[in-house]
Length: 481
Image (cartoon, rainbow, N blue to C red; front, side):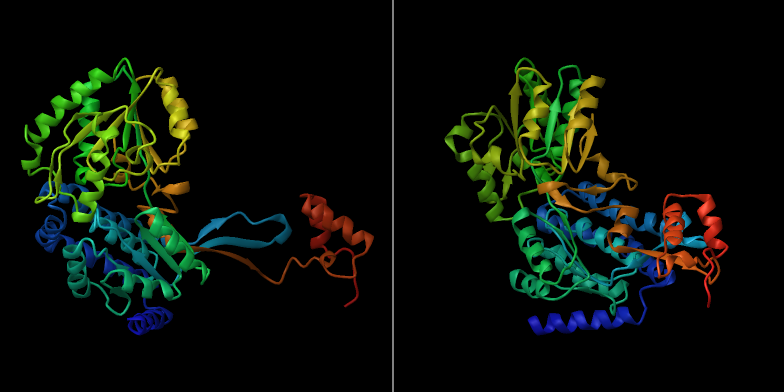
């Protein structure tokens, strides 16, 4: 396998060196082909997502297919402007000159995708890499085999196979890929594998973008429109792949005085959304596989946790389904409260005063997303100013990722680097500084031997003295040729 991957990498690098991927026409042609692929193969994509996750078709369209198509169209509209050199002011010390920042492709990039949104999380970074003019290798997740297989089949039919490749497989294939030198590695997944990716990249001094996760908090104040807030929390938790989403709420913080009212509202909304027997609901995705099903069920089998369940807790191993489950005041030393849940369990932490929630969040690692429901402007300002997170949203959940003008990415343990919209283009581009001068404006003072008079002129130039500039341009101090 290592030999095959090395040959593939060399072939892509040879294609890139021909300059094939650099013209705007090539980039636009690939993006248009991706739009056509998404439109023509929407049913195939939905079928693959259902096979991998039993994902409802409307959820597949809203959360993956439509967003992927939108990302392509946004890139096509912005591409020519993104590619233009950005003119910036020139310094007095280089007068006369022009200064520009020129975006250029990094080269040959590797994209390692995740299983929970296996179509969107694969194709969106590919869109950015293509828009930036790179050659690309996509490694879809083997945990979502139907979607992985679909990429391997469809991409060669729609895009330039000499510059864009798909490699399927598991640990062996990924290890072989990581042994090669890439010009950037973009990884979406968990922190443990991210450390392996980063260590492999370090051997070649390869830059990385890591899109990870974390325990995303939701603060719920008592002054909110509770029914609206709970609907938004519920659809952001269980309507996003049944909690298997990096930006899904991981836990709620509210006051002890308000928790009963919040739980009662959650009960009503969840029955309305998924019925009295949510395990039979076709609007809930299943857990991706047996390993993850066992991991999540183990979290609530702990007696200290099981005693805190106030809603749900039902499981069906045959269907790989777990009902939406709400818990209150689970002991903080349990695995449920320590690690990222990544499933349909939603614990509620209670505090005396809602303001205490900010300190609670900051005591943990920085999350990928943080949410606040409140009408209190002071609390909102404190939340935005004092909570560090990849992104945040006030009075809703998850929707910030749908705005292509906002960067999407983590901070600290939740990742590094960002993408979406032009940020995807920037993620896969090098910003090259270019300064252009003519042969005029020669300043003798810059050349040895450095006399006292020259030092005065040079100091004046550095300090922005117009008089020193005139002296320098007039050739002072005079020297023999």
